[in-house]
Image (tube, rainbow over all chains, first blue to last red):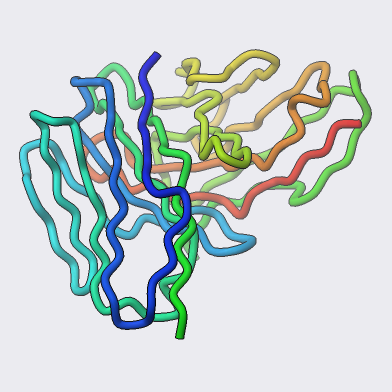
Length: 114
Length: 113
């Protein structure tokens, strides 16, 4: 079946350093790629997303890149802060008028050490 | 306040005893879905609904039912719960096409003994 692989499963960085999380998807029909942040005891919250007709998107310290040919997309967090510590999920969706199926990666637990 | 509300937040039940987890959103979203979250597996989609009376299976629908009689509500039904359905469940909603940001509920931790 379709799947999304996410690496690494755990990432520890020093405050101020950059963090990169990578995902690979299998369904070539996927056209929407959101990233979610989940803090302890809460539901996931969208932090950034990208569509298949765009190669890169940036929002302050967060950026996402997409390589459709290789079916790779990555999350980049610069100047990390302790409040960035959380679990991050990537996802791949195929959005069309008939449906909206989403497959999530297994998650990356990010620790930012002060 | 725009939100997705799940109830209950925590539930312990016995094998075979039917239960329903409710989900309600106040954003007039067309699209709603249910996920289960298990360690090392991320979020897996159980069912989704594109609009009232329109539902479809996700990746792990076995043992679950849903209904969408009203736009705001999307209950998850476990007719005969089993221990392998012990998990953390999330409901999410979004506009179907165009603005696809999904808003998640706070989660329901279900234990089936």
